[in-house]
Length: 240
Image (tube, rainbow, N blue to C red; front, side, top):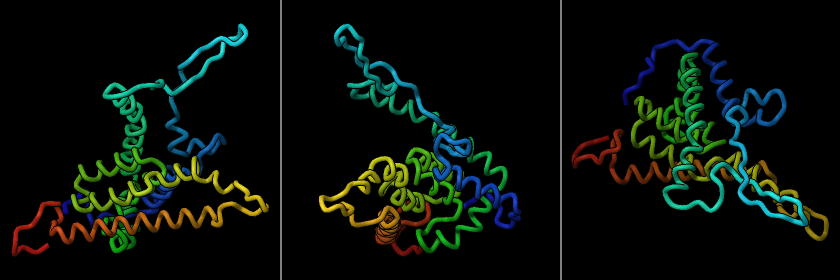
């Protein structure tokens, strides 16, 4: 596999600082409306305003309902176009930040620090670490960063397949779980006990472990389909 990052290039303290900043920036740990939200990707990326989707009169008073800029009732290619249009700011912002962080050595630090962990665990290089962190918060960010790694030759075709399996099993795990699933932990049974006999941490751990299991099942499938590092089937008699 070719890499545009020289293996003998030194990794200084600034590179590790850039990696730490990237991990916090894309993880969502600092999300919210407090002052530290300026160091969070989702907060800085923001959101589109609302548009009026429905209006009605109630005893002379005008009642309105709002929706996202896509409106309501869309379908087909038209609605798909507006959905894709809404992804552009997040993708452009993520790629721009990665280019800045790469300039300061974050990818070099990720490769050196995370490869010993990610290579045996998932069969991918440490340079995929930032895309992995981003994918836990946003599938769009994870996908765009992974595409960028593949375009620059930092991961092979088979590594991209394995990584994609990891990302889209319980995609955007942190964001989706805390925005929709975590509400279940506030439910109380009739006898006053918790309705869900598990902790939030345990659920996140199970999801993360199963993402790793899914990725390794993909590794196993690729091995049995006899694909080489470029993702192309090997001819008989060749070795990986």
